[in-house]
Picture 1 (cartoon, one colour):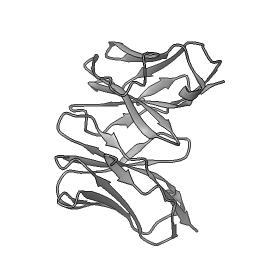
Picture 2 (cartoon, rainbow over the protein chains, first blue to last red):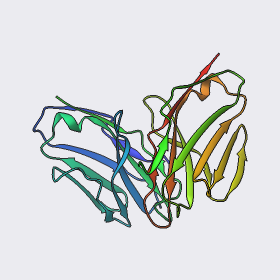
Picture 3 (cartoon, rainbow over the protein chains, first blue to last red):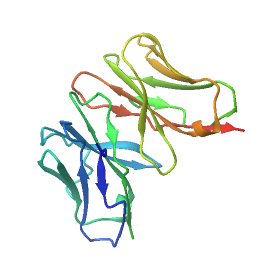
Picture 4 (cartoon, each protein chain N blue to C red):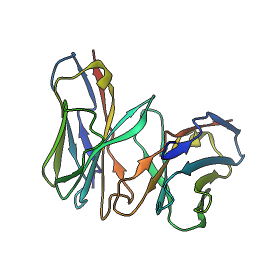
Length: 114
Length: 110
């Protein structure tokens, strides 16, 4: 398996624009997680899905953020409108069985909002 | 109080020495404990998981768990420059999400 695949790897956008981050989890994994990492706050869980259903979105910072998982092999994280404080590295991860087993991370998307 | 606490470091150790990384957690019901390694500019990767009190060894790595004192540690024997990275402690409980600490940066000096 190629592992968790995220795209794009880097994204630079202007404030106010819509940003869409994409993730393909490992085949067979039933949990998918979206994390955000910054120097100040470390690794924060934004939302996670089980079998394509959002389970906990309490980490989503505000209504500008939304996430979907239309099928078992694809998820998106959308920010609309984007703001400079959204600049961070966004990781997608997947796991199998429970939300607290070993998680496999994608390579991340480095988002810069100018 | 943070749910998972780690000293941010940097922790500097000479090559060949033992590096000791510590993590404390607040939820006494926590059941699963993980150590992830993250190289600069890369994604976290799991290096150890531990679920029971005591020690778990894997090569040069030993994870130690003490649930009564609510701490988990990672020992790296014979530290190598390639071990220089940030080490993230993560704690989970039942079917709840895992919580990560902010990480300890380790520098192994040749």
